[in-house]
Length: 172
Image (cartoon, rainbow, N blue to C red):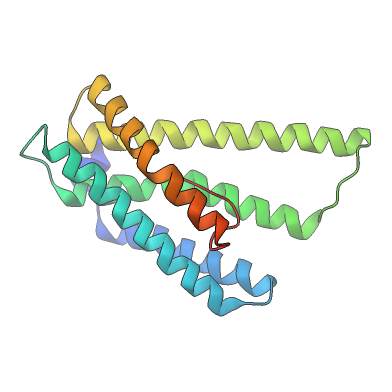
């Protein structure tokens, strides 16, 4: 992540964002509305840019010599666990559609899926911390402060997007 913050390449960010676009278009085409996938992708991009801008400006209050590009590159890599989760969730929806039963196999699958989801969430949180750390070059306490402030502001936004059914799952 340190190397990405210092020497990130634009094409890597573009590849990650194109994969996200393809996911949204494909997943919404399975639900019968591919144009809605494009709309959701635009909202996703706006949320991504707002998040990057939020951490950049907040970090700029503590350190003056930071680069916006560094935040874009590192935060684009924090999307990888989210994309893994979304793509695997879509694949499981196709292979093993709900409803699932309360049998031993159903419970085992649920336990496996919860463990998988939690591990990806932990990976995501680690990447977010490293993205903020190496892009802003701030210490642990300031990063925790910024992340708590982000949570206070953006969790209601995420819930609002979920409430209006723009996103089916509130995500960070």
